[in-house]
Image 1: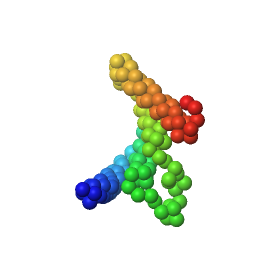
Image 2 (image 1 turned 45 degrees about the vertical axis):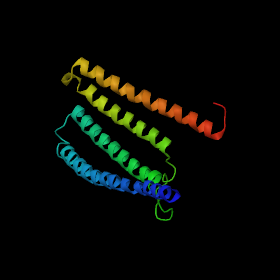
Image 3 (image 1 turned 90 degrees about the vertical axis):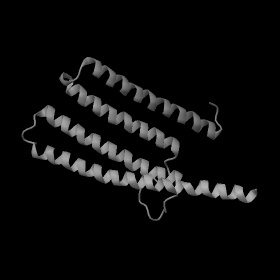
Image 4 (image 1 turned 180 degrees about the horizontal axis):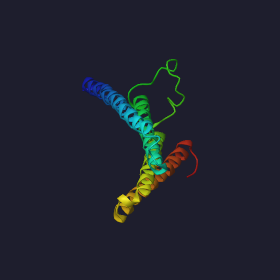
Length: 170
């Protein structure tokens, strides 16, 4: 019976390597997204003298949004691999946050990134408010506020967990 238990445990522990396929897929999607970013950037560069101030602001917000999404993908890839598959060699990496992102802090960073992306999207909606109904703007604002509340709650819960782990009084 003990040998069966050992086999099951080895299978379960080895299955974490299946996650590598997801992280490699994210790396490929990041490359595809970089091509999309280059296309958006070239459109902005070509139209730099024809866009009015509002159009230029919207275009820049689109580029910022893309950079935030790309950063989110990188953060999830690196910290997910580090937390669930295998540690990176300390000598091989120059990335300062590797090893410092546990699953709790990753959740907070992801939530913060989602709030930032949502903020940019909502700002784009407000700048183009004539193209949206009041109802749609209200729902988008409510969704954004839900993201903000979720991020704040995750931060609060992470602080509680950290205090409990440190043995402090909650």
